[in-house]
Length: 114
Image 1 (cartoon, rainbow, N blue to C red):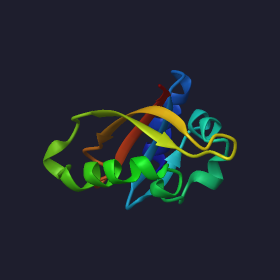
Image 2 (image 1 turned 90 degrees about the horizontal axis):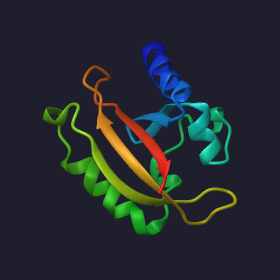
Image 3 (image 1 turned 45 degrees about the vertical axis):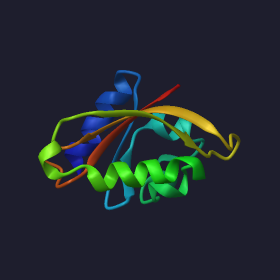
């Protein structure tokens, strides 16, 4: 877990909003990621991804999760997705998702405003 926190911390230093998602929940997020979603880091860690997705994006994300396999290590997937924040019911973000090789199936998620 410490390695994952250092990884997303490095993205924070680069000005990128990043998190690690595993077992259908965020397990680590950086400050910039929390800022975009208008929540505290602690409030996002442990939160299911689908809880902050807008309904129109849920099926797309489920499809992505089901078709990606362990053999896809390091292959980024880039798409636009709609999320919900306390003040923005339809926040459109560009998502880059990369399955991490040594994180036991975890996915690095980098988001940028679309």
